Image: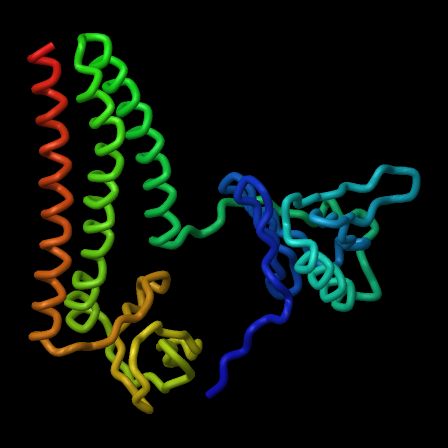
Length: 266
């Protein structure tokens, strides 16, 4: 059993833009939109320092469409351009723009989680600044300063505790409702297993035993596999993560109480 990986790097540009090779096409993701550019539609791929340009084929006398990704690694752009150029077919379509399709990329649970977390972080930041300014206006300058500093910290601890609870949740959920298989050791924190569809996947599991039992859910392919631990170990991990979460929530609640008390005293 072997795991095949693409030698073509994934380019990550400014604004969260990514460009990667996906089979016989290039996938350009930007602002939660994905453009699929078949290799038959590409005239040339050029590295321009910390930018990469994908120029499409175009009928004679017309201006070709160019997709440009900025803010990438110069070394990665050069490797990407050379690798994709070597894979371009000899026969290509005359009008490459007509072959480009656009859609919404499939979002994994982790990607959705971090996207929502960023939105919440911006919202909390704006609310924190607004409350701190209001506290300073009513005369609680020192409390306003403490609230401005401590509120993001305490909330971050609570959010990290909530995120940490994902581990014990899936450690209980996957062995019970998913499928448990034997995974083969591939390296530090890396075990490989084959799912029901014959796809070789990797599980990030500690240890160096030749094989480990891991559990995954066939209907939730974007949830990584977890090691199938004993119930005693899962209980201890659950209690630890729960304690971390409760500490964060307690500190956050105290910070809110301090803000309310500051308004009342002001």
